[in-house]
Length: 203
Length: 200
Image (cartoon, rainbow over all chains, first blue to last red; front, top):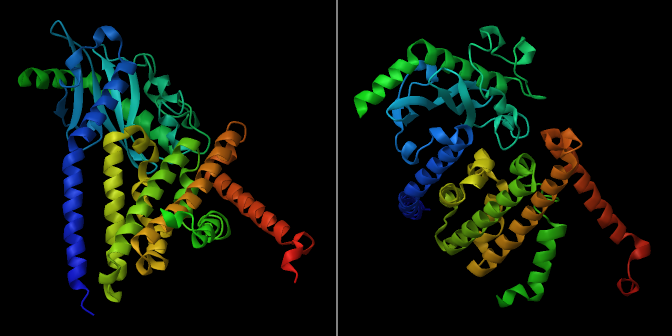
């Protein structure tokens, strides 16, 4: 009978252990996430736009064009007080298994520097070709812009667009292309000014 | 570690790695086995994480065995396993972020690997701590070696044969591994190959 006490004690010990580990690893996890983002950034952003504290320069920004109700981090590239561009965290909400978190780097002239996937849960072996480590697909975005590529082309080839789908996975690349288009469109129509304003108010 | 060498443990090793192998014979934990075996790195990482979880959970369950009343036995074991996995996941996120990223959802899903709860139920709750730890080590190795082997085969075949990397390919290749194991067993047991001393 009476197994309540051992169960309760185990639960208390488990809670203690978990909160200790969570507290101990919190900083490391945050640092490794930032290092990951910094590495992704340095991959797509030319050296002359980079500076040491850009990851610390990041600020939170919320807009529905970024695909989320939550505020997402924007990393501005500032040189000689001039806005060179920014890496914008955005979410493609319509992936095959939920959200795909992207880092979209856009120059001040509204052209793309490049795109990287930060976090996703797409099917291993099928949808994960959006990762730069797995395939070069994501580099198709390099230097693209709305001026170069008309609106109907911003989807996968299956839908008559300019971007490849993967064998066995169309939903994943389609979601990424659409998200990048949304952010580019917003950036050109008011988004860039909103970001600049927000950054100025903050500093 | 004396028991590592003893007579009983030789049988334990043979059972865990071969005759009662968790993946090839008991067919436990197939979901992560099939899902993450698409490369050697992923397979090894999940194998190590599973082995660690199994060792910690078996040890704790064995240590608590006198307090595990029938009514709360399963909830307690699940609590221990879930906490262990979460701790390992947090540590990996902090100190091996690359591996953590590539294992993704399958790391937390170790909780649902029936191999782990299975060993707690079948073995750890009726054995001493060192025995349970040895059992975890052997069973974890038996599971992990299959995972790594399947990962290696799929990675090699995947460069020319896409299906090897897809989920059906994992099922088919595991099927071949089961068939091969059974064929080897049948070959060994065949009457013409039984050594004379067994016929008395």
